[in-house]
Image 1: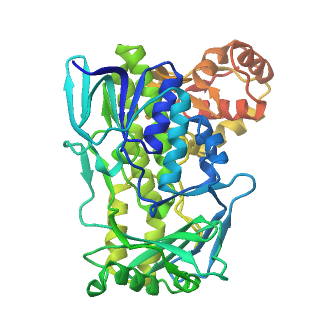
Image 2: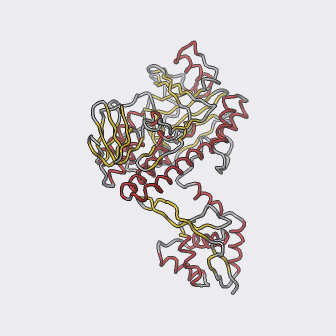
Image 3: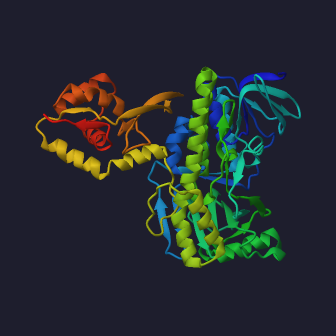
Length: 513
């Protein structure tokens, strides 16, 4: 290959690309971040929830965002499906961030530079090619080569569009975006909050970008929303805000600052999110409904895991395949989980409005999120929930703690003067990839007929270690001490729950005295 050599080439300089680049550079890799020469349009805005702070800290960006002077994200104000106004306020100091996309990207670029990433701003990318020893990426000015390439180019999907992108059929979403400025003497509404309102054939949302400005967006379906096309983009935008009567009234004391733009906002996933040498990161791989307000957080979680997977592949060729398999499975699962969690909100809107806009979205969300468990929210809950940091398999393990077999095991163990345990006759195991510190490793997961998906940990108790030490004593306090001597200690309540879980799941069995 010809061109400047790097370990990793990352295409796209948004939050996901910067987070992955900085994480890899801190692990000692040479990383080039190839991004646009000019900042993104100021009229686009992003909202980051307070729950993303832990993840921002994990990728090394929290201090930079706290210092950037961004508008604090203090919560949500929502009018949904005709229900009364509902408010959710984040606890101090766990606020999130509102920002124009250019501000946010500038802060993340600083994080990447500080970590030692080479920022390449001579884009756009005009060519990508896979070669025997890696990848070649060319801009109009130069060529670069890398052992791995990460596509973090968002909706543009520089590599994702090469047969990897999978769109959900039957629904289309267009975002009409305007920049609103408060008139002199008028205080902007809810200055730290996201405003959300649904109406019969669409929904609108707004985030503050400064003390006197807000990004205001109407989400419509060009095939199903009745649009005032004859009025142009600005007229259509104002007509949609008039449908969102309560949000619209709050914005009466201001004016549009600049033209209204139309941006594609349809959902999509991917047929594959990665293989050795290539990963799709953040919105390059999947785009979720902005209704959730968790788009940036989802992208950061994707970047964090992508960095671990890439680091693993660079350090250990034999683990590149299993690491990419884990990444692909997790990215698919996250997309499907968000879709499943949106179902109750679409159900509420469809019931209240009886309109095809909501009916087709409800049907698509049900199909995309099939087999993903998720509790329905209370009526009027302000925003779509999020999957969290735990995988579906981990959440199923947690859910099994409430299984009757586990409760029965707990009651039996409590009633016995001595507890004789041994590995169950039907117990087996399988090695599966899992995150272990800063890389992916194959870890043993226990499997039984009652829990065919398997488990390794429950409440941070290592089930494999528990099964190994269980036959060594017939007194639970002694087992507890033995377990804690062999590795990372755990609290007694978690240990008791794990013993009951292991018996209930068929990993351990009680024997006669």
